[in-house]
Amino acid sequence: MFKYIAGKMGITSVVCVGLLFSASAAMSGTKTNHPVEIDLTQSPPLVTGSFGSARNTADGRQLIRINDRGNSIRVVARDAAGNQLACITNNSQDMAALRVMSDSSFVRYFVDNNTCKNVIVRNGSQYSPK
Amino acid sequence: MKKYVLVFVGGLLVGMLPSVLRYITETDVAESDLATSASRSVEASPGSDQQDYVTSSASEEAIYLVVEDAINVQVETRVLPQLRQLIQQELVGLSTLTPSSVKNTPQGAAYPEETAKVLEWRDKAQKILMDAAASGFAGEKTLDSFSDAISTLPASDQYELELQLVGLINSGEIILTD
Image (tube, rainbow over all chains, first blue to last red; front, side, top):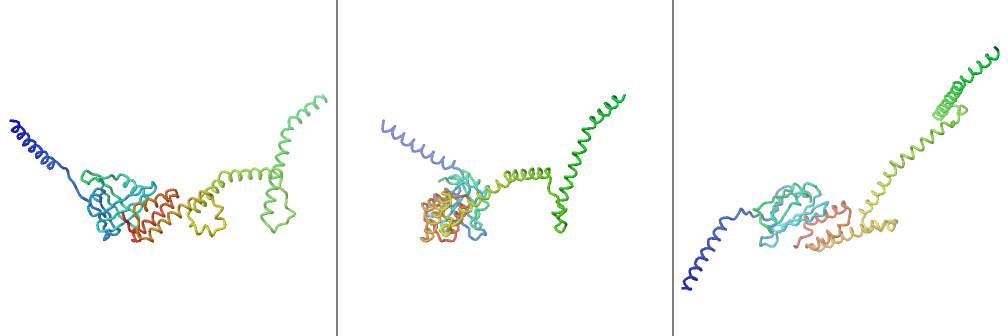
């Protein structure tokens, strides 16, 4: 009798877990991947990427690093191919944009003569957190 | 009757006294003005006869004193703050000097202690950059040491040194290791 009940419970548990897995897969939100890309063909070069995607890649090269010292901000990026590009800005608008970056942010900027230009930061649930 | 006439004339004279005094004073002022303008015209035209030169009167000296006071006030309110600002700019300017140029300057030892510290940190930051460029690599620790070294420098120096670092990274002279 006991064995019968345990067997019944086991089957129920397996079914429930299966249902939960299928439900979570169906309810997951939009996810986008934005590895670090340094487009040197553009003039000036364009850098795009998100913190989360850079960190979660397996290549061990991708990097976005922001150094904020109040009156200026330095940004360093490196893509999967090993290309590296750094820039600095003391433009108040660009600095304000960089300061809203979180671990699930996407950033896009140009590097014109070692200066970060036209910085855009996007925050959204689709960007992978670190 | 004669007595009444004398009293009338006496009263008349006393009554006219202020007017007479005012006339005399105004005449003096007018004469002194003439004397001043005459002296100025003589000074302005070097070829004229020096005998026409009339020395300044007491009233002109008083005017000079007032003008002098006004100039002093101007010096205190305008010139001194400007001088102060110039000196401050010079002090900031000193911080942009390289250590080698300071050594070559006899006044190098006379710089304020604060400026000497700025130069020291600037020197340290530049050494970090030079060492990184010499090795060809820089890791997170090196970049952090560089950031710490320039943190006490004036904003313009910080930006200039940051720009040097960015230039070395972008030229490939410094490869980031982590």
